[in-house]
Length: 138
Image (tube, rainbow, N blue to C red; front, side, top):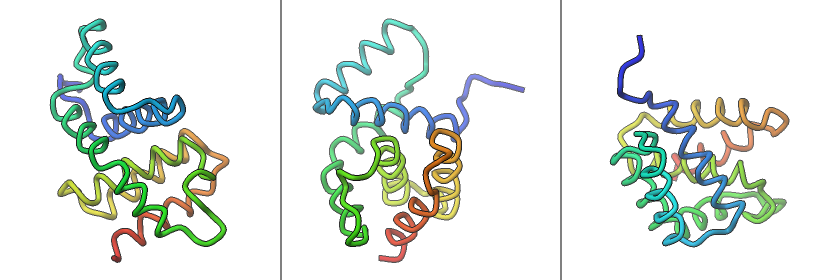
């Protein structure tokens, strides 16, 4: 029973994939917004709806602060640049959702872990769990 509304899990996956792509290519914010607008118009799809575009804009606006917050929670053995781009994208979307939405924190963490298991099955999902859990506790 599929309707026109995209499921929350699907939206999260799209956000993670988008940020993975842009982190990998090291694009600046203005390029990302223009690319998304062009992509949406070309395909004439509602792949990226208004709500998702607003979420993307908030993540982009707050990206440096979000990265700093994640980096602050990393152990001494890690730094942001050492984290694979896909995991960086998962953490960015996860911390955004924890800080800026009403989604229960446990749901967000569980979804980000499931996305990591699906997209990067060899990565230790407990890393994501630990970082997002530390974000919640402080």
